[in-house]
Length: 290
Image (tube, rainbow, N blue to C red; front, side, top):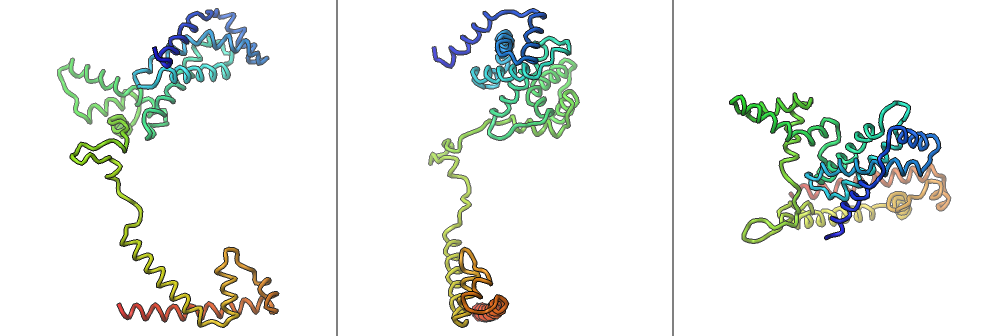
């Protein structure tokens, strides 16, 4: 027998052999954990109710999740219940733990049902776990009365039964209608292509790459020609202020060239004006040829 099949059976045997707690012992253990953080008391409390956690986990096997994982999630829910349980409320721990165990398992099932998030709200969770059962019940009742429900009528009755909107019922039907499929699965055609081959390629196509390369070369040529129209000092200022990864400050350039930072700013403005005029003239010449 495979280990993943034998382990749940081993846990089940261990849980069945655990002690049965009476109400007084359960209360004493709960107080010991809450007030004194007694880990021995916590261990006894958890161990005694592992059979409850395993029993609840088994009810969710129809969703296709491994039993080992379901038991693990049920155990986490049981431990959360022990952490939050208040023995002063006069409720048995088993009654309180049921909600936490169920919530933990349901969250796990919904997270792993599909790579697309199935739902997170309480209404979506209620639909996920109850919709098919409610649909079957409503269809049986309609058949017993000699009538047949169309899709809209069935959705309306399901929404009323579960307490959600009709639109939420329709959305959940779509989510549950199909299962995940690998993009590497083979298509049913003669070529035997994979589905991933049918996805559009968002990368630039060859023609787009050629156009982009041509445009960049043209712009680079315009800029080189425009820079030649500047004086040596203006080219140096533009290069240091705009073409470096870490632009230099006006003060640093002023100290290097022996002028004030205000004079550097004036030279920079004048150089940009020359560049704009040169680039405008070159682009105008190109547009006139088109």
